[in-house]
Image (cartoon, rainbow, N blue to C red; front, side, top):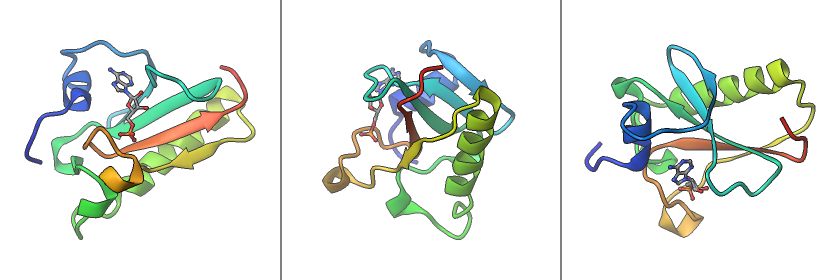
Length: 111
Ligand code: AMP
């Protein structure tokens, strides 16, 4: 991964976040500009899983989106959230602004 993004700094603890899910591999934190009553971003925490975008996945990183989806599923179960939407913005043309792979989790249910 070439450039450091704000999400690298959040994972490194250099910038605060409102964390709601934290395991060895995945961090989930509240989106700073929520577009739904619950809007969480899931990111991989380990350097070997860092990838800018779905567009850049390789054989080595192809499992990373599944890790993020699994984290979102576990989070929903933990919080009793019954319905939600998962989105990856892929590339500038896909509305991506932060080039550190992240999964948007949105639900009309509040935490
Ligand atoms: P994307 O368009 O998929 O790249 O989305 C990036 C998301 O990151 C946007 O929804 C922003 O609101 C969110 N965001 C940017 N900076 C922060 C931050 N410091 N803490 C939490 N969310 C952020």
